[in-house]
Image (cartoon, rainbow, N blue to C red; front, side):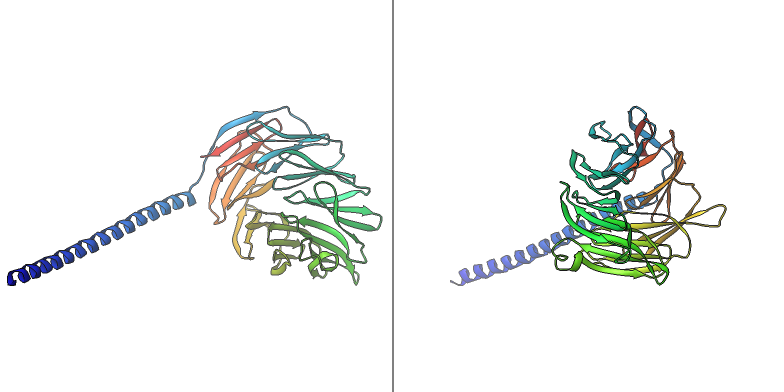
Length: 399
């Protein structure tokens, strides 16, 4: 019996010894796994930092032409960026095509002064002072609006809804249509009631409409910025008006939605930002002391271009984010025909040359074009572009 007890005690001692050893080995293995994970994560983080830092400081000195589409030259035609594709339009019609040389649509018409507005995959084409507007997307004609009054301006949404300003003697109508040409809402305005609509933009989802009005107040030209909501929130409001702001002794010449909940307004004295997807509120305002020559934006940034007295750098871009923070003030000397954002890059160009900055002020590219161009179109990422001229389009890669 004593021998049996002794054997059991020895077994227990041996088991406890092995158990402690096993626990130590397990703890050592766990530490090894943790250390290995930390090393792997650190290596990945280091590689990502290296890649990001390399990208951040990457400077491009040339470009290569990956593909070219040649087509019949048409004098008088104009070109616009259209959802990563190219829109070509004139008095006789409009054509959209991509770099696979596929025609997206070919719409014929007769117009004296064709106007175009683009949002996402939708295009509106109409004649200034005419009575017909065509609504198209990459699949072709989606609808047509026939008005009895002359069209002064219009703005299309990403769902095909379109806001139109119509003239009738001393009365101005602002009407909202769906893409089938049906009137969704209508508002009659006069100089006495609310003023004359000077600028207008509809949100991408087609629910919010932003209009700047000009009117006479105590012998002075003043402005107001109004937001209309055609969704459920605006149904219980008079004329769907959900918010408005007055600008005494000032002309607000431009209003624009940046994204679903941010818009801005630009006047001869003031730059304002509004936020809210249902009842926009003014969240930022700054006085404009210098003359603004151009404005451009994407969903994240607004660029204001000023003229300067400097002989070496006669222009300056001030870049703001959606909170109104000025993140960059960049002087430059290129006599430009167009400026646009491509993500966090600013592309400044004319027919023969281009300079590209990022929003940190790093010059990413500065060079001449191999062929004269009329339009630059971002083509998927920050290094790919379409160079559009009167008779060809080049798909290029910066290098």
